[in-house]
Image (cartoon, rainbow, N blue to C red; front, side, top):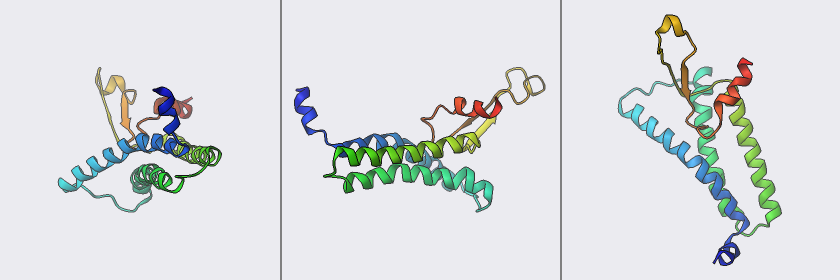
Length: 147
């Protein structure tokens, strides 16, 4: 049975991994955009902060899902070598984008929790969330900033 399944796996199927990885990002963005538009809270301008924290991560989520879907169509009959090189290039670009985005702390949502009160805890219990890079170990990447 496993042998029959392996026979049907083609190189192009590796792109499904990227679709599965980035589809939750697109759904998270769609949910929050829909919620903000519905509540009439959508006020993102084209200033530098909005571009870095909103538009570029949204673009990354869209490209992270759209490029693999396009490649599924384009690389239907391509060899393992060409497909794996293209997929590795895509992965390198997206992981680099993620690392830069996270190192610069371009998160989409954040806040404070003060178990002992704000005067005692200060900025220690700050939390934030990345919509596009939900799958990245962002705490490890951010620790490179703080040392």
